[in-house]
Length: 263
Image (cartoon, rainbow, N blue to C red; front, side, top):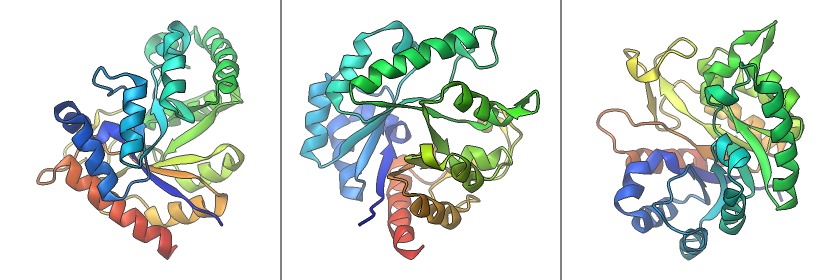
């Protein structure tokens, strides 16, 4: 029987983790999340310690956002994430030196394709997480398509909010790469902004808990279920005034659990 799991991107509660790491994981589990996606917020703990805490609270550490530099320049991270037990190793963005827009990109892509083979041998699937900037074009092609073409063994972790903010259809992109999509992110928002315009500097624009903004969540969830997506993840860069990060995460989980049953 098909089942989709709900995870929290722990970047959402980074300040809470910094204050009380274990207590925050406990709250995440109590909200009803099945798993978590780390974002370099380990608080100096070992992989074994973190994995033990996840097991204690019934959370699956299914994925992590990993800087591209850690994949290409520091082999120690591979063993860390293998011990942590993640399945998906996600590059969250490409800094300038490694960018798909730079003259370095062909060599970066070559090295990433080689690294992918090694990480796959260690049980991890490499992915790429988009922002809105991937929906600018070069020679008539979106950068998102360029990256996925140049990294053919990588899976996209579509951040559906950023896709929609950039003026594109998240469901169309999920369908286009349906054979490569196992995880997607729900990022809801209010307002609007231009591609690569700094979100915090745009009047009226703000991220919000899933289901309370402009993201077409029912349509995206319906597509996710139809395509057999395994994980849906909540990512919310910051919370609107009047709501705490943890409050928003609880509301998002409640909404998605209900939505899964309805669509």
